[in-house]
Amino acid sequence: MPIEEGKLAPAFTLKSTDGEKLALKDLRGGDVVVYFYPKDDTPGCTKEACGFRDLSRDYEDLGVTVLGISPDDAGSHAKFIDKYTLPFTLLSDPDKTVMTKYGAYGEKMMYGKKTIGVIRSTVWVGPDGKVRKHWRRVAKAADHPAKVLEAIRSGR
Image 1 (cartoon, rainbow, N blue to C red):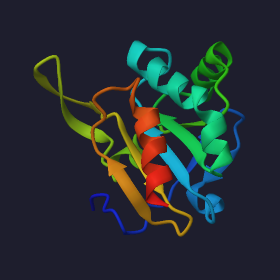
Image 2: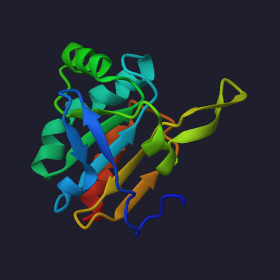
Image 3: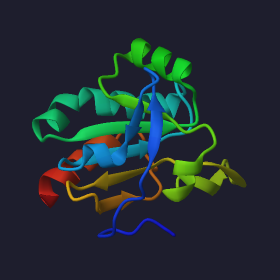
């Protein structure tokens, strides 16, 4: 079932870098931005993560929780967080179950060839647990965090 704006976001529970489980339902009552990315500490993923970091105060002021999800393990996430001083939670989805539910894993074009992998995408989940906006394929990772922030500001 594809992600649909206005419908409930698929439930998930994943482990964070501290080994604790985090469930989307535990964040009900506030806006949540869930961004999916291929790999820690790669050029595009670093630009995107640092963009969310640089705007973290703006997200916090709006009461928005930012979560990053990739297939990387907790150790990789911890190094990525430390290296770039990321102030938000990164979650591990090693079997790509959550990514698949959210349309963030599947067929994509990479360097002109079809391949299967993580699709850089983002979902804004409203306080009611419903999808407010779904960015299915993020083209410019560096610019994306500001676009998400603007959508939240104008969509409230």
